[in-house]
Image (tube, rainbow, N blue to C red):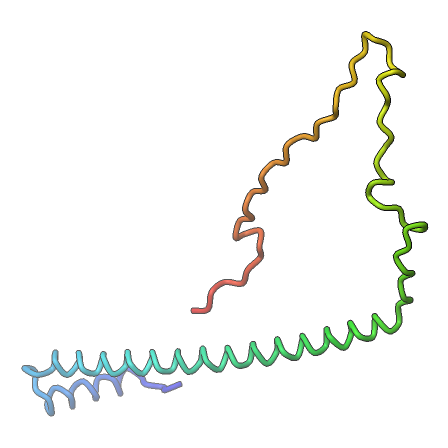
Length: 136
């Protein structure tokens, strides 16, 4: 951005020592450092605000496109038939018939089938989520 070479930097240091003096130089450098830090914070805050606005605008545009595509798909796809109990049986109708005890020999015992316990799902790791790195 600013092209400051070694000779220009040396000239600035010499003028600063002559004008400010070697006694007050550390305090002047601390003050200049604080100002530079404040300017960097303000520019980073401004940049992050602009980036957030751009992301929101892109997100709204994507949502609008998805909504339009959803409407187009819904218009193009045939309507589903009505949910009639004769066509689609209920959950009770879909159960397998239970074997009666009289069908089995006395030695055989009818044991109810037990479903295995559901294993708890492990939380996905951040590497599996494929998140972008945080902004600097």
